Image 1 (tube, one colour):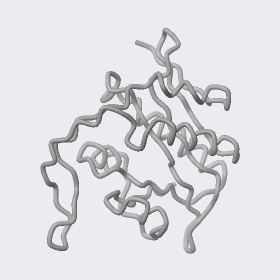
Image 2 (tube, rainbow, N blue to C red; image 1 turned 90 degrees about the vertical axis):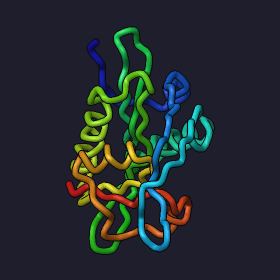
Image 3 (spheres, one colour; image 1 turned 90 degrees about the horizontal axis):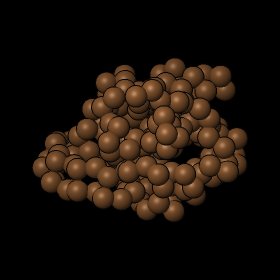
Length: 176
């Protein structure tokens, strides 16, 4: 089925409720005895990890602060995925921008959609003059594997407040 990718507008933010964000997490990365290891957690997340309102608020904030949001739509017009990148630069040695969100509806994963969204965000970051994209990747094995397959690596610089927000997240970067 053909998909349409385009920028999202502030008036479309509430459409993210059309996405099915649920995810089964068999294994996740955790610190065990001082080393990062995959551990079985056998967890079903049926909703937005931090709640729908949290992601709705973040999306609105990104757009209000001149960031970028790209959505992917099915042929019937339903929003089935989106990604956002914030415009604010941070970092001391590099100009980082934050990939703030990336979600694909459960039924549409593993079809290359996330990769297209990620690269659209990367292209926008290049246009802005960023050096790298910063990612707080959820610790689920599949999530981390997705970012590694795109070429993301451990962040050279860590943004303390992002790390402290959820220390289980992996702090990754993507060189532009």
